[in-house]
Length: 616
Image 1: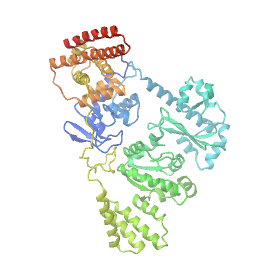
Image 2 (image 1 turned 60 degrees about the vertical axis):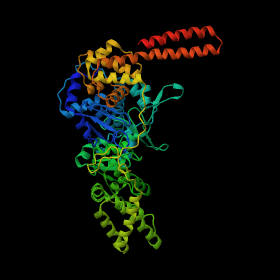
Image 3 (image 1 turned 30 degrees about the vertical axis):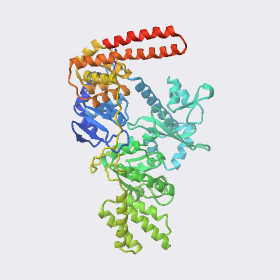
């Protein structure tokens, strides 16, 4: 079996440097549980820890979603890198000096296709930017941008471009450079003509805003129509590179500033990000007009502790902020809201009052999340009427009651008392009633709705009450035998050689047979037992999950020659069992059709097979 992968020396150096506990611990709060470490899985939402790290084997495994692997695989998954990108990132981050360009490395097909798509997007962004800045085609678009107050420096910084109205400008550009147009269509750059008659440009007569991945590679575009027509805004559809719910506009550009300040500013659209950048907001990102997803929040939370929401100042923007606040708070982030004058968006404010005023008056003086909730609640009541004031105070008491800090509750209650000339003690009584009612309704366990799956919040306690689980599935004896044999083989090359001699690849479960074949090849190359390194060498998600599941769920079994023989015998019985079952079905069919002689002959064959089975 031939393996053309990243050189072993590179794998070994990276895995030596990146201990699994330290690597995972930067993203997940882990706690000791026997010989394992446990935490809330960063790859799916959960309230009770099912994510397990095994220092001894240098692997992680989630019993909930099945994600598994070593330090390299963890970085690949958590940072959404390709396999090669993850290793290159880790080599660079660790400052390792490794020369592996000269080695016989052949990237995976999926990595090659992904790299080709990224190359096409990068070239497309350069083409659009050139057409905007250097051709007569782009003059109208350039005038529009400058009229909106977008400077040439901003255009350069965000690589803004222009897609001309012709149907095939980009198509001819990519075809000339020998890109596979069918893959460019799947990548969101082109559209297939009806009846398979060629391709045409996806974006035409639009101002083009590149969308980058976290490493600053162009993976998609957002296009604003320059003239009349619909849709006014057009985004790249979801592709192999681009999933809207997992990408944040300008995250790559804001990441350094975010990590330095541990603060992020959230905008609604890419124009807000671009215009605010000139005001000094270099930690600004946007979800491109959609609600934040769990994946986006997890991405933010790994890079910042505080968030400032700066959405439009109209009713829709305030409503969107109200929905976003609890999502970020649930992730353990401290949330504030930069409030704009009624009806204005960041772009308009900067254009009217200037960048310095935006930074000084809006960004540097945000309202707390509680203050914003109170302001938003006040909008829904007519305070000139007694009934309106009463209802607002009742709602405000409920908002303040949700605060854990007695000091914070006191401050807001005093403000309410002064503003409405009402007794502070009366307000406190109402808040106490809210808190008492909330406490009674709250489930008496740790895994309540305030838990978040991706947190590194140091103030959280790990849940101690396990979630109810169904009884584990009972596997057939031969599957148990195969799993236990593989568990032994993963940890002992001599056992693997013995199994190879006695059983070869005659495992009955397809994934087990594949793992055995890979193990034989792995040891044949002279490798010592190293489950982390072996799992990394598989480069197949399903097999990686199967191997990790075997390692995590099978008890440590001391090597016993007789036990090994029993396992092999159990596994070898399965084809005979299956053949007997098949012949019994044939015999029943023969009897039903009235062919008694055939049924008798099949019965004799069954007896022969059953004797063979007893002798095994």
